[in-house]
Length: 203
Image 1 (cartoon, rainbow, N blue to C red):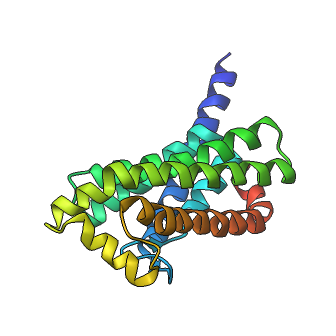
Image 2 (spheres, rainbow, N blue to C red):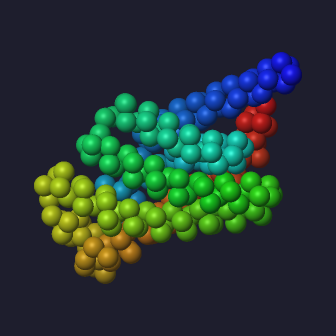
């Protein structure tokens, strides 16, 4: 009995250590962000979801949520917040909307095909939840923080895409494409490296 408990404790310690390492890597990658040509420059792409997805596939969805949380917590400590934690909470929700569908589908049957299906589902979920969070939370919050009307953001989007004329078209033509692009790029990188990284994560 004691041996079983000892083995379980060692297993839990390994998982916690892996969550910590992957969170730290994700937090570093979160700092390396850059804008895309089709969205206003305050939307910046980073690859921090790659280690989160790797951990989700290898350790399970609950570990993925833990990695996402610790990643954002580290970033919060390093960079502080301009939104009183609202932006960080929104980012956590959006990140989980991506990794959880992918993680649960892959957990059901671990194969390359289900990984692709899971990542596609995660990308669609990311686009949908990201749109709602931006429309109802992030854009209104940033508007108040920076003392700028939402129309200022819409005007920035209109410069890049004349079809952007109001908040709904801003979300449709800037936020949705950004999140789909992010989902596809992050998913592709994850698929390319997971098989190589997997043996390390399963030790």
